[in-house]
Length: 391
Length: 183
Image (cartoon, rainbow over all chains, first blue to last red; front, side, top):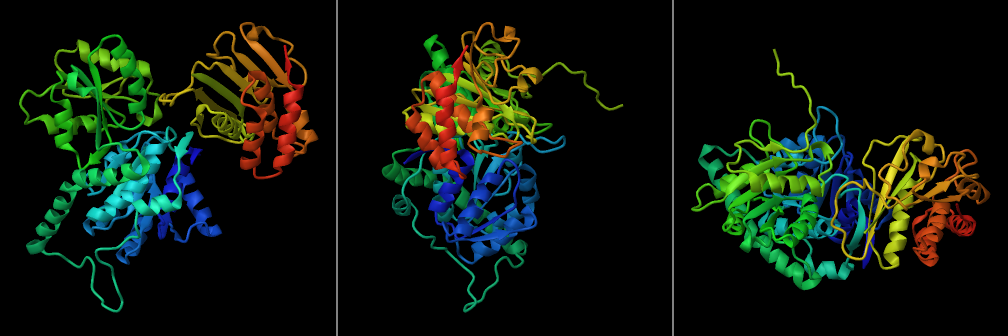
């Protein structure tokens, strides 16, 4: 049934319907509502799950690694500094091949303090071995959370469901929440590939010397390489039951476009509005929405961008010294292709600054009028300030 | 698409006001989106919330800067902040006040409605004597001013979403619906 729900509540509803067995969490704005709702569900019996209160995010993920080794379905949620504090355990989760699902609510990292939307927190965890799926609206947040459990348990890798702080986490909109029976048909009880057992003891993650470490890492790589195809399978099953699918990427009008805007998250929605306007004016423009970031769906991205002359990658994130992070990945994906488009990069909306349709139109114009892309991302909407660069 | 901005003070139920209206409008068949101003709210500080209404799926994911209408839960805000900033000409301003503001010059291009939501909340014992919660009264006045959403959806939303004393809140909404005045 369709209900008007906050994005954070949409995550909590998906976790309840997924019959998660162990939740561990430490609160942080703008994620806290997720675990507040779940803690209420556990306390009142609406969910039959163990809720672990921990003293830090590091312990949060460590406790879930333990629970997941015991063969139960697990979930946590965090943001920003909390995710950064989990960093070591993110590697341990993926290395242990544990299908833990996390909702990651994008929030800028300090300094200076900022609680607003910025994808640099999740993207700076790109090398930890987690699958990363970015969401555009409340319905996609709900659907992706359910899909994440199915995908994680299929390939034995952890999944981060990424949503922007406030723009998704605190926004109320209609979300279709299915009945428990329907979700059960999509997501059967977790049947772990392995679990610790006191009757048949063995050690998880004992030391792996140089003679076997590389094979274990390669095993992770093989699993990760399967993810685009497995995600497609998960989406097919999901679509049969719920009549919705998203794709690892969504290519809108890409076949006949000269310029393609590449977006992720909520900027995609505003870009859809701009696309309608520009198409009405006869502009040959298209949109590529990136949902999957890890693994980076190189083949799908190259296929979508192949007929364009120019590509404009729009990043609500920034890697100092290297530019927008989606920009780096799109350029790398295209670099060995024949007849590749010129790739322009733009940084917008850091620390929650509004990314309006006018901002996106400015990017479109700059790309259309530009001859050679800058090596660096171009910052859009900056105020004039006097820079002081050391002494 | 219609965009409405709500002004209030931290702890005064401004976000709940926007959310309750979103739920009532959704029941009445509208597409809705509501969200708070993404700030670091403190009790008593000025806060804002927003509501978008449309007939088809709402794609805009940006701030509301040129609202069609505004709702002001606390009269003292009129002096503190510019409640009409960006408000479209001809748009409604719904004010919680007992008597009309002495200086109406700021509202020359707009339509003004007033309701004494504070007295209604006190009469229905919503909140405390010192901090009455006026949001459900404001919803009733809003429903009359806009001729939407229908009062049955407003009452249903209050009964479903207001945790304490929903019937007093329903009574406040109904009283404000009757008592709102158009200047």
